[in-house]
Image 1 (tube, one colour):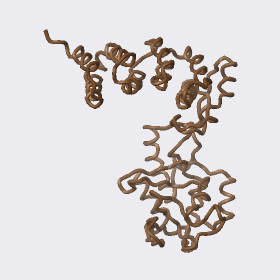
Image 2 (cartoon, rainbow, N blue to C red; image 1 turned 30 degrees about the vertical axis):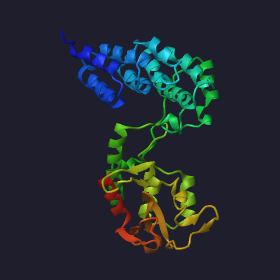
Image 3 (cartoon, one colour; image 1 turned 120 degrees about the vertical axis):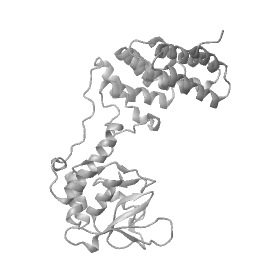
Image 4 (cartoon, rainbow, N blue to C red; image 1 turned 90 degrees about the vertical axis):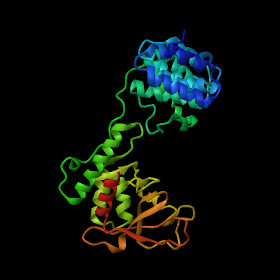
Amino acid sequence: MALAPLAALHRKLFDETDGVKFSKLKDKLLAKHAASDRLAVLDILIGYAREGQLLHWRNFLMSDIARLVEACEHAAFFAWALEQPELAYWGVDGLLKSAGKDAYAPLVALAASSASSLDVRAKAVKSLAVFSGQPFDAGLPTDPGHWKPDSLRLDAVLAWQRDGYPDGTGHARPATHASLDDPRTPLDKAAARLEKKLAARRRKEQDLAQPSNWLTPASAADMAGIVQRWALPEHYRRFLACYSPLMVLIDSEEYVQGLTLYGAAELLKAQHGYAWNPVTQEGISGWPEGYLVIADAGADPYCLDLGAVQDGDAPVYTAEHGAGAWQFVRHADGFIDFLNEIATAA
């Protein structure tokens, strides 16, 4: 008698020795059966994670298992997985999802254990921060695999444990200027158009521990340093003051490498390697006087010509880097035109 489809896939997974074929079988299992036979699929994947013959796939399956599991399911499996170096990373999320706050103590112990790898310890701290609303991850990369040893903030984590694991309030959303909701001027309308595109992107992916793709009022200190150094066109000065980009990356067909739009906090450093040598503390020969880098796409600079300000605006020029002497071409007649262009592209 032929095996039922789920049982047949089960056997094929455990018999397969080719990683590519295994991947296709796994995807087929999830696509055809995860919705209708979730618990059975979980049992198959957990069984493979425990004793499957392709060791790297035992690790890769953990993210699927953590995604499929629900509260109060398979907590013992995830507790076991934390003790397996190759499974511990995604075991962190699985244990939190299945055991809830009962996972706090073992995950704090994991974070504090020097016997565990840095990425696993960082994952424990990051996931605890997200689950509890505590700010252990504030300002750190979204991917804990990029954390450094001093990113773990173990003193704060252990203090939280001593206090009985209180719930936190999470991270506040960055402030935004009121005129984004009621734009009146051409500049405000261009900024509001860009904000609408950025908001759609934030709804898909956003980590408020290190917020990205926001337009937010600049600090008084940042603006003071900028206006002391440059005489900015009024439209760009107001843009920075009211709508300063916070980790804004425009990714589109026009900007295939992504266009980074600089905010007030980044503007001074954005000139490094273009107009300014930070090592010698000198201007760089060959850079056009009055060209202010306001964005770059794959290191190709986009600059305001501060020597051609008219009616509160200035033209935007761009050039390819690494081509010898800079050969700038006019890209937009003014900053507002440039802002409308990238708002359309975002």
